[in-house]
Image 1 (cartoon, rainbow, N blue to C red):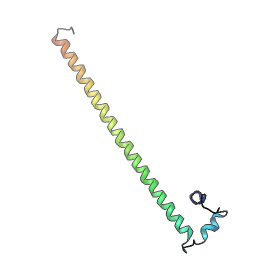
Image 2 (spheres, rainbow, N blue to C red; image 1 turned 180 degrees about the vertical axis):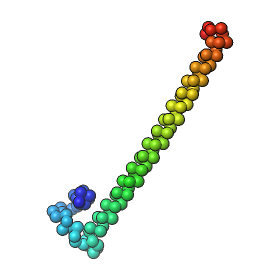
Image 3 (cartoon, one colour; image 1 turned 90 degrees about the horizontal axis):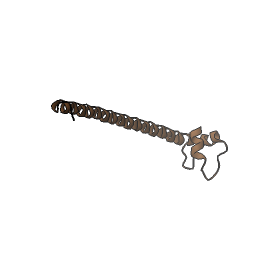
Image 4 (cartoon, helix red, strand yellow; image 1 turned 180 degrees about the horizontal axis):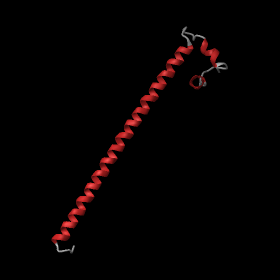
Length: 94
């Protein structure tokens, strides 16, 4: 009902009884409830697809962040090892 009310609020003629309005046919002879039900299903499918896309993007971003953090840790370890080797090679002075 909320979906139909939202979709019909901007019609040129106000719909006072949404249930009765949906129970009738449009000018083309189509059942209004079927038309709006199809629109409702399409909107739900689009919403599910959007959510899946957002989740996939978030997962990809999280994976990218993990990889960057891992590379940063490896670079930090390599730098620390090189500093340690430099101290050893210089007899404890830098």
